[in-house]
Each structure stands twice: as structure tokens, then as C-alpha cells.
Length: 590
Image (cartoon, rainbow, N blue to C red; front, side, top):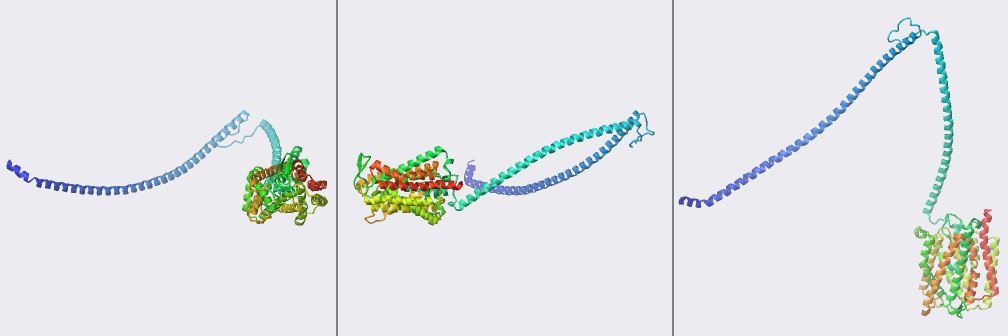
């Protein structure tokens, strides 16, 4: 036993090694078996997949054959069914015909039996009898035929009446339809013509958005030809674009009286504001002696009269105007920015040259009239400024061939005589307040001449741009010209001369002048809307007289009687020209 254990203990490592080898060989055999089974299964799966695809294809073929056989069977069955139906119908027709023939023979035999005379021979089945009718049968048949004819005649008469009524009603309806068709054609033709005209206008407008045939051509021309003193507004004010092509040429009788009265009141208010503007400008500029305002307090003025100081006052005023004018322009004419954008996008150099040229002439006119008001009384300066209607009329005659009428020639003579009467006392007697009379009169004359250039250039551009965006562009251009003129070094005689202590007063004065400008612009715009440009221009001729009146009331600025007479002559002459523009279209229309 002990020996056995010794042996077993000695052979134990060998047994463990042999067990590991056996286990390793078993594992290898299992792996080989696994790989073999796996390969066979993969082959079987591949083969089954191939057989499955073949079976699917066979099934699809069988289904296709089944559908074909089913369609062929349906076609054959439908053909057989149709043939069978036709055979049944043929047999049914034969049976019905045979039964009908038997029924007719039976009825004929009954009629013959009832009449008392039988047929000489029986009627064989399947043949139609030809009986010999009795004597009273002919009579009854005649009665039946007569009744049948009468009923048929009555039916035909009723049918004829119905057809006649239908025909008349149909004729009426056809006539109505024809009338409606003609009306519809006319309406369609008018609609097509209108659409065609609108498309042509739109196409022409898209090709040239600043065409001279716009609806406000006559508005701009009438207002610019009117001699209202709009120099202190920087541009003549026009009405916004309206559907009516010539609102200013409409007779006053066609406008409601309350609207005309409102327009005249607004025009008068605008003239009052302009006169106050002129007097405030006169107060702002220093004189020889301090000016007494309303007889209560003295105001020495802010700046001395001169070209550079006039530029500075214009710039201060335009700063206020450019801050508020865009808002006012948008309120008066909502499409102002669209028109300005089209102006910039148009690339029309001719139009731009007219716009900028008119702005430059207006800039010079503003500076010169400021210089004139600083040296001579405001009423006299504004009256002398009214030389511009003469220059405008003569320039229109030369440029546009618009020959003035007899009234125009008399007005020119009257304005010339009035200007002589106004200007002569200024040289004979030194005006109150001091100032250089020669410089003031010359500046007023030059201001009127340059303003006439502005009017002529604006007439050339009339219709190509609405007056309100035109005014806004003019304000902006004048602002640029004023800024550049002050930025460029000027000589001592033309440069601004401002004391540092007067800047607050100058700023306040610029604000007042700018507000008065915009207020007058707004009043005049609404005045033209209510009363028309022609009537508003007639009220505007009161500008010199009202300026002189307010100058006398506010700062006690007296004028010589001869100057007052000349002012009246100029006012009446200019008013005559304005009234002629109102009456001339009515005479042409009549």
C-alpha cells in the first residue's frame, strides 16, 4: 500500500501533464469541429439563400402567369358571356314576336266575332289576318280617324303655340344677351385701354422716373411764375402731387368757398410770418443806433452787416431747417424719400445740373438779400428784390418763347417805375438805422436777379421732380454751399466778423429764423392746397407792404412817402401779373 502511494506520488506530475495535453487536444478537436460545422452551416445558408432567391423568382413568374391566365380567362369568359347574352336576346325577341303575333291574331278573331261576320276561313297560326270589314266598321274607323286627326291637330296647335312663346322668349333673351354682350365688350375695351395706358405710363415712368409729363408740371410752373416773394423760404412751395393734373388752373368757382377762405387766411398768415422773418433779420443785424423793439427796450443787434456775417446767419438758420425739414417733408409728402432715391439712382446729369444750379443761385440770392436788409430798411430791400419778375419774364421769353401779354408789359413798366420811386429816396436821404445805401440797393438788385436765375432753372426742372423733394434737396445743397463758403479762407472784407460774446444771441436768432422759415413753408403749402397756387401768389404780393408795416410797428422803421408810393406801385403791378395768370386759363377754357 505504501509502495503504491510512493509510485502514485512520483507519477503525479506526469499525469497532470498528460491531462493538459489531452485537454489541449480536445480543445483543438472542438475548434476544428466548430470551424467545420460553421463552414458547413455557412455553405448551407448560402445555398438556402440562393434557393430562396430562385423560389422568389419562380413565385413572381407564377404570379405573372396567373395574372395573364386570369386576364385571358376573363376575356374569354366575357366574350362567351356576351355571345350567350346575344343568343338569349335573339331567342327572347323571337319568342316575343311569336307571342305578339298570336295575341294579334286572337284579338282580331275576337273583333271579327263581335262584329257578327266571321272570316270565311280560319286564320292559321303565324299569319296576319286580312279580314273583310263590315259596313259599319268603315264608319267607325272613319270616326276614329277623324277623332285622331282632331286630337293630333290640337296637339300640333298647342305645340305650335308653345314653340311660338318659346321662340319669342328666346328672342327676347337673345336680344338681352346681345345688349349685355355689347356692354360687356365696351366695358372690357375701356378696361383694356385703361390698363394699357397705365402700363404705358408705368413703363415710361420706370424708364425715366423724372419725365416732364408728370402731373405736377403745371403746379411747379404756375407757382414759380407767380411772383410771391418766397426768397426767405429758400424755395417756392408747391402742393403735394395730386391726381388732378392742373389744380392751380381750376377756376375759383369750382372750389368750395370755405376751402378758398381757409386757403386765403393761411396764405395771409404765411405772408405775415415772412414779414416777421424779415423784421427779425433786420433786428439781428446791428445798425448805427440800437433798435427799439415795440418802443419798450433797445436791442443793439448781434452781427454787423457784411457778406461773411450773412453767410454765418444763413448757416445758423439752415442748421435748424435741416434738422426739422425732413420731418416736415415726410408729413407733407410721404413719398419724398422714394423720389430722392430715384433721383440719386437715375444718373440724370442734366437734372442734377438744374437742381444744383438753382440751389446755387438761391444761395447767392439769400446771402445778398441778408446783406441788403442789413444796410437798408427791410421793406425797401424786399421791394427792390421784386425786380426778379421782370428778369424772369424776359428770361422766359428768351428761353421758352413765352412772350408776355400786354398786362405783363404794363406790369414790367409799373415795377420799374416803382423800383425807381423806392430806391431814389434811399440815396437822397440817409435811411434811419445807418448802413451803406449803395451796398444795400445793389445787393437787393443782385438778389432779385440771382433769384430769377433760380426760378428759370427750376422751371426747366419742373415736372421731373416733385416740389417737396426738390425743396429738400435745395435746402441740403444750400447748407453745403454755406458750409463750404465759410470753410474756404476769405478775404478780410468778406470773412465773418463775430464777437465771441454774441454767439448765444446768434444761435437763438438762427433758431428763430429757422422756425419762422418752416412755419411759413407749412402755412403756404396748406394755403396752396386749399386755394391754389395762383390765389396764394396774389396774397404773397403783400410781402413788401407787410414787411414795411411790421418794420414800422415793431422797430419804428419809417419810410419816405415816395418810397411808400413806389412800394404800392410795385405791389399792384406784381398783383396784376398774378391775377392775369388766374384769368388767362379761364379765358382759354371759355
